[in-house]
Every structure is written in structure tokens, then in C-alpha cells.
Image 1 (cartoon, protein in one colour):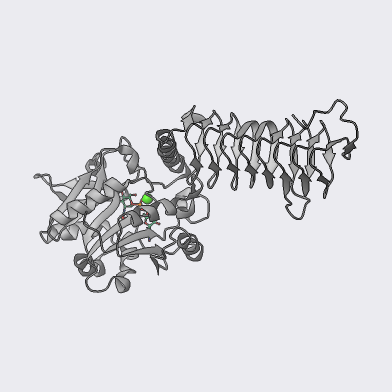
Image 2 (cartoon, rainbow, N blue to C red; image 1 turned 90 degrees about the horizontal axis):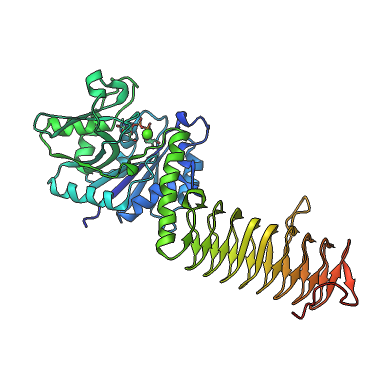
Length: 431
Ligand code: UD1
Ligand code: CA
């Protein structure tokens, strides 16, 4: 596959229609910002460099974007104020130089485009012999998209924005996805001459396409078949649509690796989660970014695994259990109604129903350690920091005071919990 020289990501817009005040490209999509998905698209094309145009919330967007690329391949260009997509590219001219080679442009609010589609775009561009290529689609609802006006011979003539379109143009079903591969020199030549004589008083990048056609360059439009890739995010309704598509993709990747996701419709698994084969994820479960789950685990129904959770092979987190920043050892279990926060649980630890790791004292978070084979009785509150030794037991309803260190094999009961001398009716820790 030919590689583009430069990818430009447009991410300076405010996104007024989101009604959030925050920069639109930082809207969250499965545990990371929408822009992170677009940066992935750009890097997958292996360009020599990536320019990111920032403007609205520039510092915040730049700081976030830097975190999406460990290789430091992103260069930032400021667009102040934001006068349209064409103006955004105009701001890149100094960075692009006289001959920027092949330039792919991506919009920061199109997070669903697949790598395959973008690669095909670059391929098609290579065949235009110095022309341009763009992605289009024919979605069932062309909401807000620019329409593709074709000539009698079916070749592309221009793109008309919805707000500028005449009634007969509004009925055109083919829309512009805002993804292009340009011959950089043409871009450099045409960008300075764009006008803002249109409904939005903006400089439209789309006008470059009409100018190329007018001077006889070949412009190829590649029509995407999968309508799902064509979701552009302008409102929170669109954000939810995009999330649903991405979620399906993420779940399918896990399923194809042998994770039994029982009910994809009610399961949230964010980006960046590792799950081993033969793990069963039951309905209504939420697994956040960064969680690591081993093989043959059981999760849910109604479990919430938050960041920093690590489950070793065969561990189980069940009904109405929340975990955060905690490790469960091999075959450790917390099956019902528990909060496990900032805890390190050894192998085969059992956390009884209703157990709470009281990790927060109002000022700071503290950690608990529960060693291999320990049995934490139902309704125990462990006021962190606490250590429960190997094979130790707490009785039902025990409140283990802060700083307690329950020695291996001992049984502690009561409020506040104290050592039980005779093993009495408590469970035998030797089991
Ligand atoms: C744009 C296209 C439209 C296409 C649609 C696809 C133009 C003129 N119109 O319209 O044909 O169907 O995208 O999604 O290009 N941005 C900047 N600086 C600006 C303005 C926008 O960086 O001054 C960025 C935004 O952050 C966003 C992207 O460009 O990521 C698109 O901007 P938006 O205002 O959403 O364009 P649309 O009206 O959707
Ligand atoms: Ca848009």
C-alpha cells in the first residue's frame, strides 16, 4: 500500500451542536476521547508525519492528543479563530511547505472510518495520477452532510454544503465524509484562493475539490458500503450512535478471541481491556478501560470493573460487585454485593456478600491486602489500611479497624473485630 506523506487531522472546531462547552473532539467514546480514535486512523496509514489542527480548547486538546501517540509523531498547528475547514488547512500551509507529497485529510469528528477504507482511499488516489480522491457514502439519513454533485458522465463536479444547497441538491443521497487524499502541491496552490461567500461565511475545504475539477484534474469518489463508518458526530445523539458501533466492534474482537459475551446488547467493554479466553461475561456488566482479566474468569451479571482492576485466571466477580484499582488472585471470588477498592487479594480468597473495602477516609485512599485462602465473612467492613493474613477468617458483620493486621489462620469477629480464641462457630480457616 502506498503511504501518504502527511495526514492532517482537523480538530479545531468548537462543536456548538454538542451543547457541552468542551471541545467536541474530546467527547468520550468507550473510555477515550473521540480524537484518540481518529489519531489511530492517522497512524495506521504510517504517514511520515501527522499535523493536528487545534483551536477551540487548543491547549487541552493538544495535551490530550500527545497522550495518544507514544511515538511523538504529532505536530500541532493552531487555528485562531476558526473560519472553516478550508481555513484550517490554510493554517497548515507553513508546515506543509512547497511540496508536501500526498496529503490525507481526516476530520476529528469521524471516528468510525476503518483502516481498510482509508487504505483504499490512498490506493485510489495513487491511480488518479496527481488528482484527488475522497470518501463518500449514501446513508439513509444524510443529516447535515455536504452533498456530492455529479455531472452527466457521473464524474464528481463539486460538493455543496447542506446549508447552501438548492432544493434539488438536498435530495442527493451521496454525501461527503470529510476524508480526502490530495496531491499536496494542488492543495498548496488552491488553498490561498478560497472564498467565504457562502451561507456560513466560512472557508470550505470542499471548494478545493470543485477547483480541481474545474482545472481538469481527476477527482475520484470512493463510495463506502458500510453505512456505519459514515457516522459523523455533531450532537450527543450522534455520539451515542458512534459509541454503539464502536462497542459492537470491540465486543466482536473479544468474542473472536474466545471471550463468551453472553449479551452484547447490555455489555459495556471499553477500549483497551484485556480478557482471556473462556472468560464468561454475563449481562449488564461494565468493564472500563485498562482492566485486565485472565482466562476462565466469571464476570457479572451486573458487575462494574473499574480502572486498575486485574483478575487472575479463574477469578469471579459477580452480582452487584464494584471493583477499582484491585487485584484478585487466581480463583479469588467476590460474588455478591461488594465494593473492592484499592485491594490486593491473593489466590482463592473469598469475599463474602456485602463486604466493603472502606478505602477512603475522606482525605486519602488506603490499601488492603488479603492473603491467599483468606475468607472474608459476609458484611465485613475492612477500614483500610488492613491486612488479612493467609487463611485468616473474619466473621459476618465484622468491622476490622484501620491498621489491623490479622495474622495468618486467625479468626476475627465483632465490632470492632477482635481475635476469636476458640474457633467456635466461625469457619475453619484450615479448609
Ligand atoms: C464537513 C464538510 C461536509 C461533510 C462533513 C462530514 C466542509 C465545508 N464541510 O461539514 O461536506 O459532509 O464535514 O463530517 O468541510 N474544523 C476545524 N476548523 C474549523 C472548522 C472545523 O478544525 O474552522 C474541524 C472540526 O473540529 C471537525 C471538522 O473540522 O472535526 C468538521 O467540522 P464541522 O464543522 O463539523 O463540519 P461539518 O459542518 O460537519
Ligand atoms: Ca461534522
